[in-house]
Amino acid sequence: MALNRNLQDTLRSSNTGTITGHRVLRNTYWLLALSMIPTIFGAWMGVQMHLSLFTGSPFMGFIIFMAIAFGFFYVIEKTKNSGWGVVALLGFTFFMGLMLSRLLEQVLGFANGTQLIMTAFGGTAAVFGVMATVATVSKRDFSGMSKWLFAGLLVIVVAALANVFLQLPALQLTISVVAIGIFSAYLLYDVQQVINGGETNYISATLRIYLDVYNIFVNLLAILGILGGDRR
Image (cartoon, helix red, strand yellow):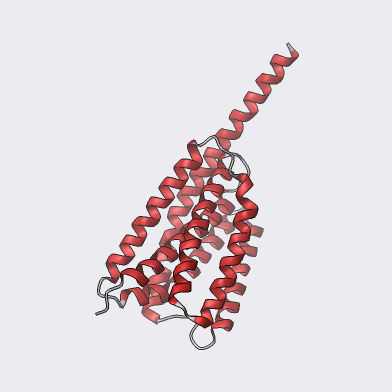
């Protein structure tokens, strides 16, 4: 009887965790969709203003970007259990839209720029759909990937910072290809973390998944611009 009762308690706890995980994931997807609005608005505004932090001094631009981004991370973490967390997250996505404007302006300089942007958007949506589906239906535990993914992320950051000064198209292409692979894997990891109860706050979950999606889009667009851009 005791064994049977323990088994029932375990199953009940597992079912409760699964239900909670799917509820958090549903709220995360809604907030993720909402976050696209300030991102698009920020990107449009940045293109209109010809905004770029990296003009003049690339290193100072990188430092300013990191300072602002980590400032947002701090505020979002401190307010994630209140409505202000949503406000802070949407403010961050607006900022990231502004940061996207430099790449968008470069791509829009191509004759097929609009087509490249839509292709990158469609490709990102496809990657998101595949990875989210795999994370939802797979019985495999992907939590062991975290250390390897973090190590890969550090390599990308160092290489990307170096290429701010070097401006080598071949290195940019390599970075972008590797980054798409790493952030696609991060997307798989982050979605499963929500489902399995490893992340129970939908604002924090949205921030992580948003960064995955954002980086996949940016790097896919960079690849398309390098390989498929038609000069006017």
